[in-house]
Image (tube, rainbow, N blue to C red; front, top):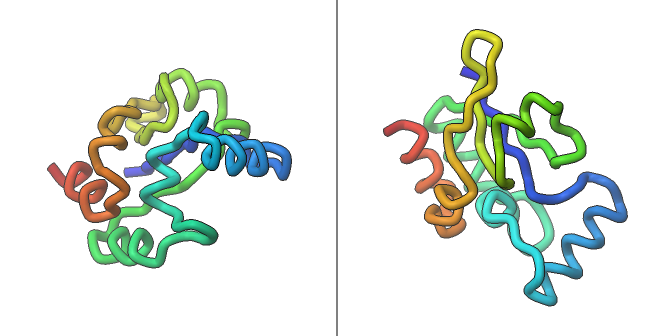
Length: 112
């Protein structure tokens, strides 16, 4: 399966800066970011959990996703999967929030 996680942030320099400022001010959040990134860099435990479970997740910012991917995702962040050429939402923003920043919880939900 082809999983794609879509962040609730843009992947441009300005987008990243806006996200960081919003995060510090408490006006912006992205539970997928909390699962995949620490304060400054990507979390090694996220990539280790994916590797251990043999699950590949492509990570995209909202400005990098296609219109079909964004339509399937709905409210961001979200985790979607491609099934027979069609995108379907697997984990919604609230599902990702319930993972509480835990890569292990994300993997557990995908395996369930």
